[in-house]
Every structure is written in C-alpha cells, then in structure tokens.
Image (cartoon, one colour):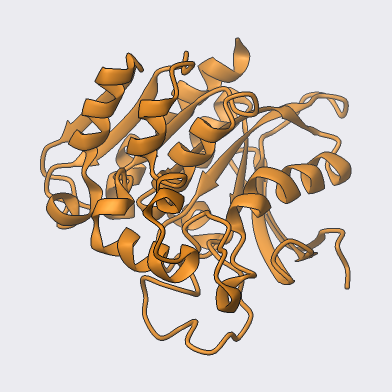
Length: 283
C-alpha cells in the first residue's frame, strides 16, 4: 500500500494551485484523498503556514475547494489550505445507511466500538495528516497551523483546537455543532462510535471542553446564519457562548441575518475567517 501521497489532479487558481492527492492511511486502514491549495510563491524556499478545513456531513475533500472561494484570500495572505475527507470509506456493513452517520460522517473522533474501529478521524487529522504533509511537502510549514470548519467540521475544529492548543494558533467555525452531547446528530454518532458512557462523549464536545480549558488565548470566531434550519435543534451556539463566558474565553459569535447552512453562507464570510487565521499565523 502506497502511504506516500500521489497527485491525482491540479488546477491553477488565483496564481496558486489546487492539488488533489491520494494515499493509504495507516490510521484509517483505507485509501484517502485530500486537497491542498498552494498559494503563489516568489521563492522555491518559501514555506507557507497551513490552515486545515474540516467539512460537514456528507462532504468529501472536494466541496470546500470547489464551493467556498477561500483561495482568493488564501492566495493574498500566503496561507496554504488543507482539506481532508470526512471519514474513511471501507464498505463496512451499514456505513452508508444514513446520511448523518458512517460514510461522510466521521465526527472527527476516535471510535471505540469494534464495528467502527477504523473511524479514527481525530488521529488522522491531528497526527497522521500533519506528519504526512511535513515529510512530503517541504513548502509547508506544518508547525505553524490553524484550523476551521463547517457544521460537523466546525465541531471537529473546535474540539481538536481545544484539545491541542500547542498545535494550532487559532480556530474558527461556520455553524458548528457546538454541544453534540445534547443534539440528535451528536447523540446518534456518539452512541454508535463511542458507546453509552456520556463521560466519553464530553471529550468530543466543544461546550464541555471549553469549560475545562482556561488557557485559550486566541479569540474564537464563529459565524452562524440566523435562517439556518438546523440552528434550533442541532447547533446550540448559545450554549458554547455561555461556556466561553464562564471560562473567560474570548469568543466572537456573529449571527448573520438571512443566511442558511449552505456554502453560499460560507463563501460570503470566508475572507473574514482567512484573515482571522492569517493574523494569528503571523504572530
């Protein structure tokens, strides 16, 4: 199995290149695809800081690259974008039975239940992928990294950041699942991936984690569409806001009137998020 990444497509955009790669993941036990947007470079020796994007339910590594328009600001700021897939794809029985669990729904955790033991997207994003990038792309400075995401990926970005403050300079999210232990999406995923022990669930819940973590120095940025149909029952940004306030963690939570849960919403505000991270990565 080829663990080194192989380039499978390349397209020029805003002076840089969207490049798609595949490799065999030893963490997940299957072949995985990911995208990198390389900004234009004036020197072969120049190294770019990296900004990881974690996508939401049903997505692959392609959605963000094709729909967000993030490359314009990333090109201007000189930040490389990294977009992994959202789950392993293994042909496990039942993995594609529902859109909110299994394939395309890895929830950026390490599953403990035997049937889903390959669903280890947390270790893939935090450990395997950065190591792979560091060893194979000398133009990336993986020690300077930030992370953001959408919906399930917003949940992933927030929890990964809060558990690894030494690895990421900043975090932001669009319409994140802020309190999955209390919403249907999270309860379904956590029950199947992690079992019935609620204490295990809290290790992947941003609202629970932020209340335990007093060492967050960077401001957390969240954009939330006010017309998002998932806002009342799935996302709970106000619970995260309360937890941040109690923990004295700086949060900029922006409710955007009229916007929904889609990539139209993401594309509208993506430049603000790129600038947010670029500033942190330069410090």
